[in-house]
Image (cartoon, rainbow over all chains, first blue to last red; front, side, top):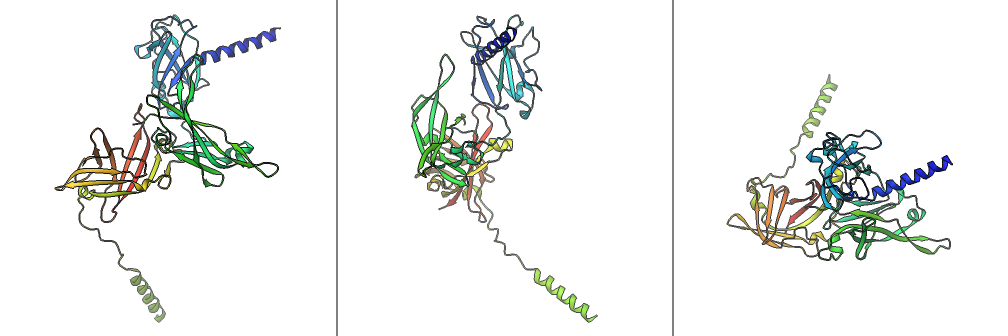
Length: 265
Length: 166
């Protein structure tokens, strides 16, 4: 019986963790330790609900090797640099750059967490954690976009490396085309959703070396961009054929890749 | 003794035969860089560099785009008036519009040592970094267009274009 209580307690704890994580959004959605990021947190249902002022308490590397943010000066007297901006009922916003906030090198920063508090520390939310930084160490992947950051006017090359795949169809397929769709963000009560704008486009695929394939496009030329719509990301797949057990070709597709657009000037 | 004299003679001949004047191209006249930019230029090569990857030391930093899109259609005409930079026109043909301004006036930051070429249209201005300006030894025009993160200003991508004179 005592054992069952522990299990139930564990699941309640996990549920609380995921509920808390679902109340935080980031802009941009992915970021490295050297990127500027803005977070928005909804503190509804926490002791900070209804507060008229809010301050952040932020810390890096949850699993070890972390540091306090430079705004964590004194728990009972947070400085103005820690003050969050109100952007709606119970919604608080804060922007920072990881390396500046924590005084750590880009390669040292893995993730971070934070909580929202009153200036004196008399009330606070639970911890919101962990949130990962995009790593600045290159990791080979089956699907890869070149360049690593792109905007709508760039030449974008999609790459498919079959040698890295663990999926049999991906390993054996002969790619013939790639499809790409563009998406906009759409806010919803259960978090952000991504809505496709227009239809997928189909691109020819070229073989760059054995089991390596590529397809290139320029988003602003390949898609019709409706006025006033902010395109935030694209998703893509490689399509091709494998031979089934009778020797007949069968259509297959790779897993789907996603890339965020970065605003550039 | 006679044998040593023969060996010395052969060595002397080898040394003398090994010294020939190199056939270097003439350096040519002293350049007038701004004036050398004038003319109609057509793209012959385009490369794209992932500056973000280069910054982090990742592989896959540069790719050649020349054959992926019809870049070689693109022409840039720089006109002079009385020895000074004057008007310009761009003609993309089927090429991606690497410079979106169709026409206007061009200028350089320094007529003697130009590093930046400015193309000013009616409502927009493009600032282009000169990789090198044409000389008699290397008559190509090399320019670079850089793209920075709008939020942080960090360099993310650069495109390098090599133009040949028409």
